Length: 212
Image (tube, rainbow, N blue to C red; front, side, top):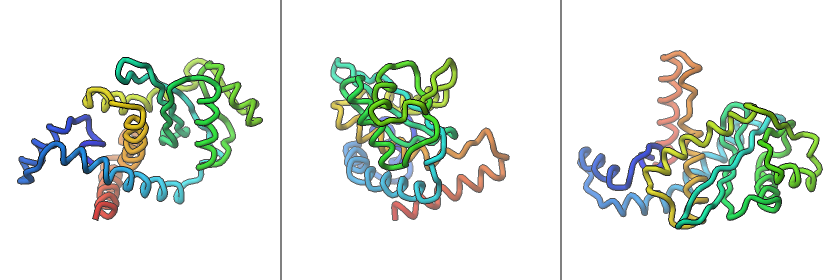
């Protein structure tokens, strides 16, 4: 949780655990998130999908550049109108085929939304035309700020990791990071202090139950 949730390096997590009396190697932390991260992320997604219905919500789609070994890769992201990260998808290109795979992957899990907000990338319109939902697309200045802001936690995390090794690692880590970020994203700015503390305690208790 410390490594995925906070912008910390493996060795920083090792030092923090050592202060708490846990003497491990930083490579153990790497093994932990590789081994248990996908399990926890899948369980978090399963529980959140059962609690909430996304089929009639507005989606925001956006893509961000990620450099791996000197080559440009693309990380697609879908969020709902409340900022909940629905799906992340890493590809080598930013064409119609990649956009179509990304949209189909998201719709397979959450159904069809009422509205899809995107930037002016032509790949979105071409992909939606294939699916038959091009009339649901919305483009405009500042309309997609929700998706743009959702990239910020990942960007901070990416800086602490000193880049990724390959696109498979990017996809794996981004998916785990999105699920854990959703779990602990409690809208601190919208709730009173006492309500926020209750929600934070509930989220931490649920996490401990998952990790037990």
